[in-house]
Image (cartoon, rainbow, N blue to C red; front, side):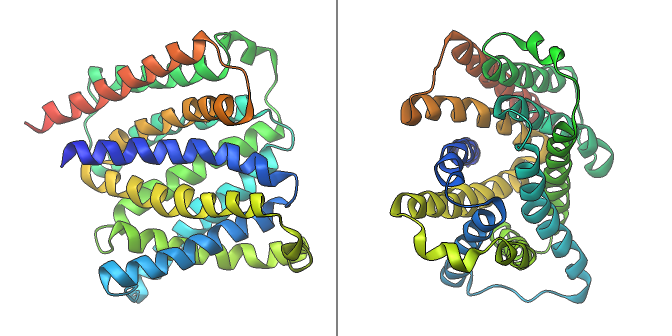
Amino acid sequence: MLLTTYLKLLCASLFWGGTFVAGRVISAELPPFSAAFLRFAIASISLLILIRLFEGGLPRLRRTQLPTVLILGMSGIFAYNVLFFTGLQTVEAGRAAVIVATNPIFIALLAVPLFGEHLGPARLTGIGLSVCGAILAITGGRPWDLLHQAVSWGDLAIFGCVASWVVYLLVGKVMMHDLSPQAAVTWSCLVGVAALLPFSLAEGLLDQIGWISWTRWAALFYLGIFGTVLGFTWFYQGVKAIGPSRAAVFINFVPVWAILLGFLLLGETMNISLLLGAALVGTGVYLTNRAGIQSRK
């Protein structure tokens, strides 16, 4: 059972790494709000079908659950995408990925007071190694190059992505006391789609949708099915099974997968720093989860 959880988390990170490639494919043809809306519209329809088949339908929300669902949709779906696309207007993808790789640090630190999780030396070392591995892979073995650039508004927007995801993950942990991971993801996607709709219409979505090529549709379906339905659901299942801080360490595989897939599918360069970075990430994930298992014995 635990091995299945780890495999799902690893696959989720792979799917999310692939979203960078898919995003590059559609970015030349669709503006950000329209692309985000279509992604989550596809995801929402798919999730509604799946939850009908496997759970008998989407459960109705109690009045007390509405604020939590709104927070999930506005943080992990709407705000994350808005801040992500805003930041990438001025921030290089590699630098943005380094910032996003700090997710596990904030999640692990906040999980201590919020959920009573214990952070011993081994888990802290594991988190540190995984972050260092992600930085090494993204910067091509020259992490000091990051110091040559001042913090910009684009950087702050990417840090906003980190904050949005941390809120989404930690609030989702609370939400899953009452809802299944799939139901929580479905409700958050529906809220996010509703919030993205007016902005996508303002970008001229209705005029553009008829001109989208089949390759862009394929990329959008990848984003909706693999990057959202499977990625979000399996990640939330991992959070429910092993806790936020241990699951969040797998996020550091995302930039490694992104670089590897960019090399295989887009012909981008890859060097030894990626392999060393992947080794550090893998070691960090192992240490973090091994320490977590031992603390439960």
